Image (tube, rainbow, N blue to C red):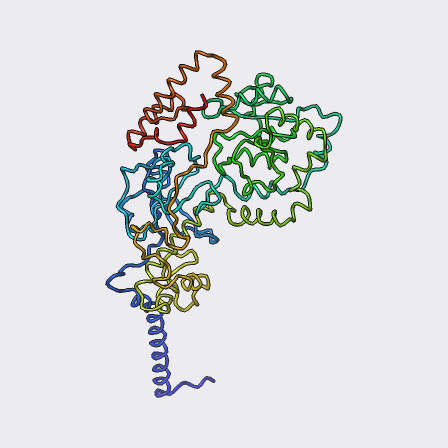
Length: 515
């Protein structure tokens, strides 16, 4: 039989329960509100934004809202931490201001804000945007997000798939088939549909065909029966896979400007022959992985080497050494794999997530200045941030996320970050955070493009005088002398917007000398 509590006992028990409940409520209120008390100051009366805005001030290839609302994750979390916007009213809230290189207009720029970096972004070859040759215009920008691996936030054309495909072991059966007496394909293949300027490579193909057998797919110099078009194949890789060498043509030989055609060669497990940037060290899995036209005195010498390697299995396999067990474990291979497999795991989106992480750190470094000490700063936010550094009301009864605490503790003390420096000083003196972007002189006209222009000119003497006259007229008008007539009017329209005289640039004068 259960004994009933006496009235005094019930009263004492009720009092104890009420006291315990009051203590719990007080603790909960204190835990959830102390950060608000710390944060609620005259100069910082609002919470951090749930998702940090990244403002693109310019259009994107003419589109006014192409990137609007796209979520960018804080690297490693897989969840959105930043939201890209074209809404210029968000200028005050965005820690950075981005400008697309193909749409930059120096007459349409915001007022400079103290400590807010301007970022030039885009994956176009710099030669497509001649204004990038102007050092006065390039000094507008503090950071870059481009195709180059030495950019502050690289957004290359490759991603982790480059590593996965390039490092597959050699297919011994396929190699044996390519060197069997039944193999009847020519050693070299080319697949290209860009036949018009600035892609002037049909001349190269015609020249190589004089010295080495080759197949050409696509609309340019097609040497196969009618109807054989590589676009009808399952993939570009499947078309080139049976051959030993593939001609990889880039429309501009700008530093590190390499598009998907080179990656397709690695995926296919064949050797690419390239006329692109002089330095492929950050892109090629090994120094032997590519054959560069610049390594030969003439196209005839290049063709002779291809014929020799096509008939010498050991010489050919030298260019596939990165797929051997020894090559896959080399120190150089490890560094290459780390960059493309970790840092640039997601290619272009890796660059964006690094940009988001950078902007987030700048945002919280600015908030840090509000607090009297670092302990108060950490205490104010440790319960209010998710692992991707977005704001929420966290249950104070749970311990703060170690990831969040580590992030908050890593924010530098005011005065140690350089974030307060005046932008009029160039912002370049801040450790390696900012470096004023220099005029981009990394693009040259490739040998093969010069060959094509040369052949066109010599084919018709009358064309020489006519073409030279056109070049002079285009230079006087500030236009690219090798630009197509259709693109010329587009450039005129763009020049009217930019009010930039390109005729002063040595690179364009050098182009004129080709004719």
